[in-house]
Image 1: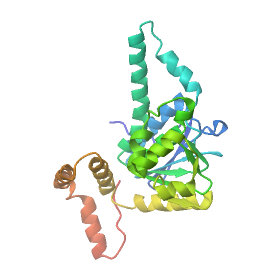
Image 2 (image 1 turned 60 degrees about the horizontal axis):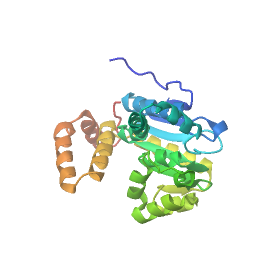
Image 3 (image 1 turned 135 degrees about the vertical axis):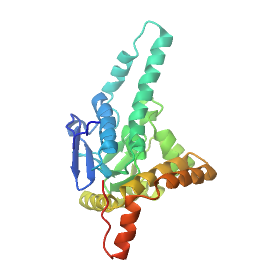
Image 4 (image 1 turned 90 degrees about the horizontal axis):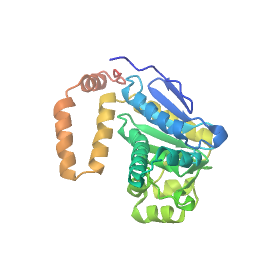
Length: 277
């Protein structure tokens, strides 16, 4: 199997890898990082690369420019009509459904990636931006961040993941309020209601804190980090009994690893453990 290249070159994203931490930056600053068709495709490609690249242990998803993301590029709506064009109404709607499912899979690729993905949010995070961050493992923002589940105000039912993931983060009632009203809320409120883990006073403090957290996670056992993400995701969607059964099976297979031996040896020798990729 051919090894994927480190830090692939993309049109709408900047991807870097340093000391186990991969940074994926939305890079359409002239469009406030509005998500066009190319960015949808490249975001999934970046997550597949992060999943497959053994030297990448943790991902940070951030953005270049003044804003995190203005959401879906409305020019995409015309593209969707073109992709679904067919003389048969039934076939046209079937095509559109397949396109929507494919876009949904882009967001799910963040969740599906075995490595933890940390969202670093500044300024505007609207519509599709919220789809992105709700699929991440951890979310942090700066005080200038602001959010809106905007779809209802442009005549769309949010269909790429927000309505499915947001209630699990902020609760059913708050998710309904935000989705029904499309109201704008700030970084402090986002942290208070649980959309983000923490809100920092400045972008510099946000970047420093997220980078430090990513380095901390990158120093952990990669095998255990991947397993912990899989167990949490599985437990979210299954009963406690199912989750316990799955983790028992996982550890029956993966418990006795080089990582376990290194952790025990490092503890005995009073030194930080060093794990292989």
